[in-house]
Amino acid sequence: MPYEHSPEDRLKRYKTSLDKMAKEEGRNLKSTKQVQKTSQPKNKRTVNPVRPPARKEEPNEPQFRPPQVLVSPAKKELGESIATVRKNPKTLSVAKIKELDGRNLLMLKVRHRSIESSLREIKKRRETLEVQLKSKFITKKQYQEEMAALVEQGRSLLVDKERVEKEMAILKKK
Image 1 (cartoon, rainbow, N blue to C red):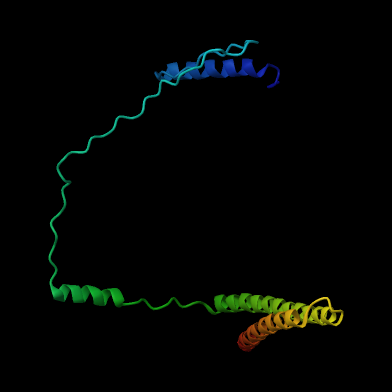
Image 2: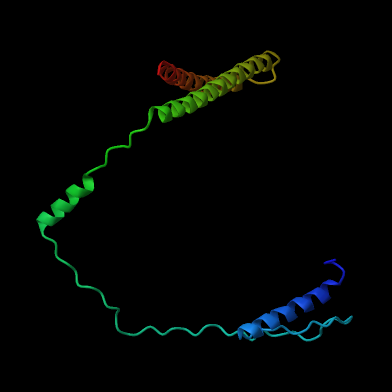
């Protein structure tokens, strides 16, 4: 059974097997000191003898730079014209276009539903504002400010809804 022995025994066996394999290959492994358990805490601190890497001193001479190459105006113009040439867009297969259109249509339907739910929320908020005004919970000025904000939100949502419906109609025709 693999778990018959304590973890310390298994660790010792593992280290000895590593040492044997290293000796067979002719390598020297960095071995760690055997850990001895004591009931007393350590009083001495261990100091890490790691030294920082030596700093590289930069030479006082500047690094070699290749000479600047003069380019004729004709070559500049030629290079600029090459840079402006664009590749034709990749043509997509009919199946890929239909798949993309289907995804777009689905996303548009989701967007349409979210716009409609936002419009319903605005209507509910308007009704609560009217009730609050009638019960004198808010002032007329607060009511007008809130209504102006709701009207602005509603108009922007209606514009978005109209745009989404047009895009959906275009995709459904395809």
